[in-house]
Image (cartoon, rainbow, N blue to C red; front, top):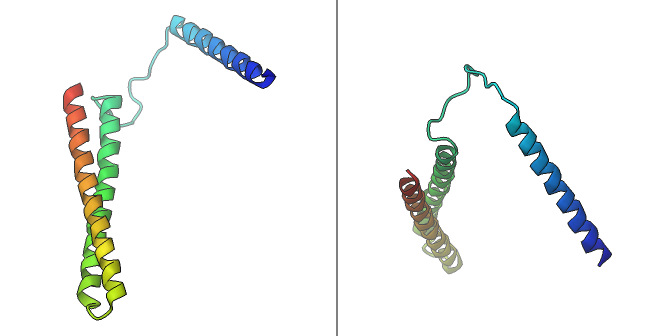
Length: 117
């Protein structure tokens, strides 16, 4: 019981300090540099999140397609061995699921970006 009370006190103190620092930072007039040399994203955080999600979904999709091709070669070349054929079928099924997840994730990201713009 004492540990929970100490935890709540520490967290409460942390949030009070955080709120005070935010209030003091808002009171100061900050001057932002005009030319930082960094690329500008006009969409802000939403655009950055969409770019990261698209990048990750592209990586997943490419990996799933490569897995699908490898499973196809396995299935083609091991027609005599039943165990390897079962492994190839499982790999192909998993790759198909990966492609479906990547495509549905891409559709979800595009929909969310459309709804927020």
